[in-house]
Image 1 (cartoon, chains in turn yellow, purple):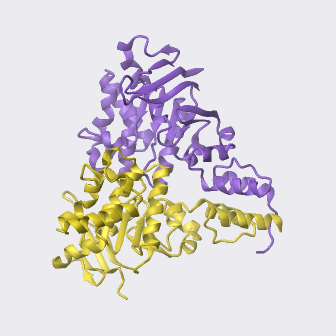
Image 2: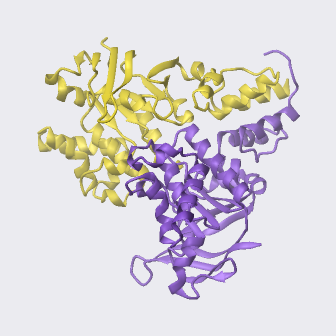
Image 3: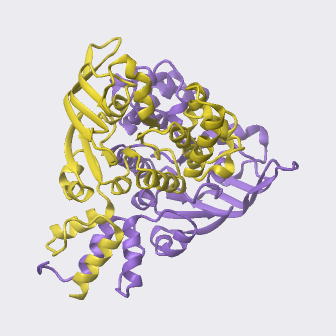
Length: 281
Length: 287
């Protein structure tokens, strides 16, 4: 099977007006498999967002190739198909909403693609149902909460039926309730709709939901594996200014003090169980 | 000494219209001078509405607010002076940067206070140092700074006015873990060094647990709790029921407690958790 997204020896540089070129990526390689849920961690300026924009041709590599489902993103004739295949959701929901009625906003992308009205109606309804916003279809987007707006933005992407969605810190501006709503939807899209998900985030507990975690620093991948693998490298993550999930950190700290506790603890429940075992035994 | 006090404070949005909505009901609080208060509550609980009363941005529908013992609405024309005493840093304050250089932007507040040019320059320099902005950045356009630097520049603009009470609405929202810790450490240090009273509005109990002395919990337009950090956070079950996002480490201790293991469920940081468990668990052994 063709990979969903493949970075092959990708280099990328910005040219700013005053300064000379700034090289961001050099000889970067990464394969995102179809159906996967990949979380990308890294502090501000580590190259995560540039990587996200390279995923669907919003940025094109200076050297090397980004291949989306077999298509080279640098090839102009693939432009529309690539963007239909890989959708993007950004941090600020207010910047992504264009229409004055929720369902019109969701239909915006499809109208631009010249899809038949009957098909648009069907896809908009389905997309709004998928993000649990169908009841709000006639509402004005600016009256919704942050989490609801972000779900409308996601519905706009789903309506285009992408195979993959790249989320660039979709919960950074939301309150805890909004975060939970959006995360539930992201998980559901991956599990029930089999959409490949790339989730860029600062929140370690969000990354723990993925089946693969990538850690970036200076535009390089410094860790790559299952959440359990990656988060067991507590010192490495802390050295690049990242946290680990609290249950993992607690176990790590106690282990350092000489307690016999397992290393690969991610969730609250696992942690409780491990402490209970040690306490009882 | 009490620096800020509210008496039967009530507020309704759009009063007298069909859209009238109660935002605050009978708020009575006293804030000690020089203290660090954490203010938590979920969206819509009234916490932002409350802090906007502290410096006269909103006028209470009923009740009174005292700053430094003075009823701030006694002579409404002098409300501007109150604004200078209580500095409010909004959410995403970097959206409010506007001047040509960082230096001019920070100087905007002090300049409006009609201070001497020397005093303004000194305050700009001091404020930049407190938030950790280097001198070369001061000459740059605020729009050329990174996200974290912008946030700190906006904060410096309020610090330069040397308010007696500094109110920060979600100062760490959207920052990465490193940026978050830097901002919090700087604010805590500033509070200790200058004796300024700080009110930190936050969704994050972890952040509040790290820096605050006392915690005020707003729920459904009223004060639900107002006590020391330890007292408030020992009621983690109630906080959780109010829809507040309790840190995972607290959930671990709530879970252990439910299983009958004798732990304090009011643990809010990993460090506290470690200390608590070290008292309890047998050392060594094998898996």
